[in-house]
Image (cartoon, rainbow, N blue to C red):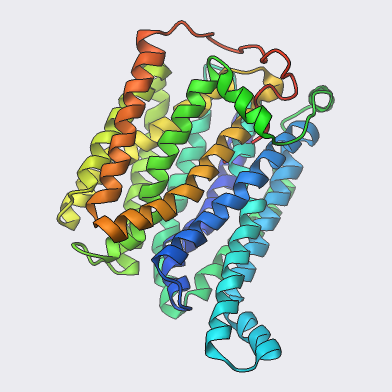
Length: 435
């Protein structure tokens, strides 16, 4: 029964990320057609994350109350509608511009670009399904198999990026709207499959229990309380800083690859991201289960932080495509381990009623990094060249490695598992819901 549920949630996440992977590397080029510069492209990527920052907490806490399945269905529907709007942005935008302002090219481009932004914001508001899927896995696994189960999410993510970017690159030859409509189609199929084949992971008793603890989905007070918790707080700090470094790499990679010294085409960039996906699948689908059997998760977190630091620093000075493919190995491996291990440690650090909210808040923090990172990365790339984003990210990860060493290895005198709520904050003990 457990294996069937894990298999189903794996397929749901895979198909969801397949659609996302279809359009992610193409968004900068799509937006540039309508006058978006590097800063505007950064804002476009950030708009999705900003919307998810507010949407993910609501979905995470809601999944604790009403169940994982209905929340997943709503989020998949929102994704499908967002992709439809993205694909229809050009004809719809030109029709709106002509209707209200007449046939002015500048106005038409502005309206189309506005609809592209709207499509990403819609998807972001309903796009908290990864954290809900993680909570689903936490529901159906024990602590011993938690990291291995959560690794399936990473493997699904990787597979989506193996097939998605390469397919999106091929489809883009027929126009950038084609990958968007293809993504909408995959999301629709995903919605149908989840509706018929995904069972609920929470019993009615558990949902009633969680509903009794319900509080507002997000507040500054709850977030501050989360950072004060002796085990959750340090993990959130690492999640945020790692997310900032990794999101900068992800969000500006297409722009970086298109410039000197690589000058990669959109198709070639898609193939490189496919290669990264292969590495992620290997780490999170196969290696993470073996690694967590042999090593403590806190030590894996430290080792992965060091790998990421080395990879990002080397990325800044990459002279050619061949070297880049080597440099991407420690970045992908370190990122895959960190994503899985941090979520596993978080899920084990709170009561079972808080898992969805805690993972949702972690996803919300990650979304915040994806608000900051694209604009910051675009600025660094534009002002200081290709070296700057890698140097910045590498130095951030050096700090993360030092912090993880001091907090979890040198002084591991923290509550082991299931730390109690902060006094006076049983309102979702610092784990105001939720990426």
